[in-house]
Image 1: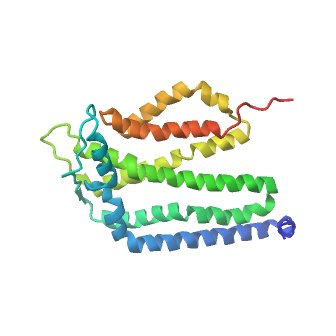
Image 2: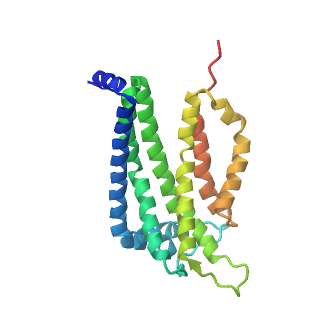
Length: 271
């Protein structure tokens, strides 16, 4: 059956290929639209229960930090009591456009695996069995790591950043009034950036397969990577204590080590 599909694909003309691609893209657009409509309908509940959850002191990370820091003498006590961020809207159409745009971005994230699968059905007949196996691994690994990065961004990085910036004052005479636009820009940016950063092992694996990098590369530049990752962690969470810095640094460093494990020890010798 697979062989018949490959022969059929090879016999297709250019216009037939374009027509098949158009059909796949149309299905992908329908899937994206269905997800966007669903998120649009349930967005008020999603906003209250998920997106705005880090604005309250009872958020899961804050309660966890409060329990951990209570038993560590050299780390400042982390209190979750009384913390609350109240957002304001300063532009007339902001709430409507944020409702629309957030529905689209969430739909794109959660529909992405289905969209990639639809594209896979178009491309796979032209691939050899060993190539299909490699693409399947990349597909599963890429999706898992992306959603893991999104989870780390939502449960760890964004709450820490919000907690620091919401309580920071250059002067006590200037109160913080955080706009809805500013909150959503930071929320989406940090979460999606973490999702993309968590694709580093997949990128390393692909480059290793192509013979571009090898494990010695990661060993050689490990010290440099640690410095860069520490700086990156400090930028993401500009807090003064080592505890929150470590919380952000560790996942980034583990990604580096995982990337090293996924590539070959040395480059193959050229004949």
